[in-house]
Amino acid sequence: LAGMLSSRDGAAFALGAAKLLGARRLRLALNSLSADFIACSFALLRQGGWLCEIGKRSVWSLELQGEAAPASRYVAVALDATLGQAPEWMRGALGLLSSRA
Image 1 (tube, helix red, strand yellow):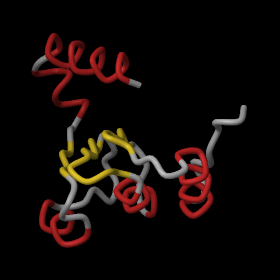
Image 2: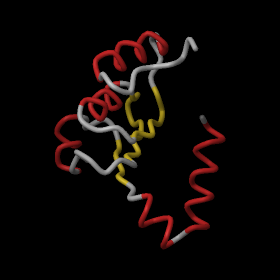
Image 3: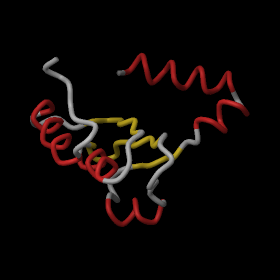
Image 4: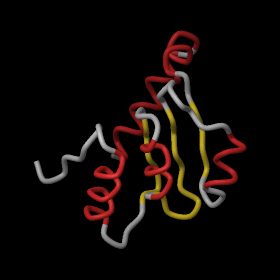
């Protein structure tokens, strides 16, 4: 369980993730947690990295993302709505993310 990180404490998550990554940074982060975890996820991204937000609480606006993390890209996806509207696309997108994890 060496790669397990806290989903209850944003600061503990950030420290644990930074320790696991060392000098490396993420190309993509998929986040479903709110509050501190959004900022932590942005901090772990490399320049030009993507944060895909699938949570519903405390989702950042594009304006906030642009001010706080201008070197990254951000997209918020309402999985419940997208799954109902485009199930084949969602299956492909989630499969692609899974293959890259």
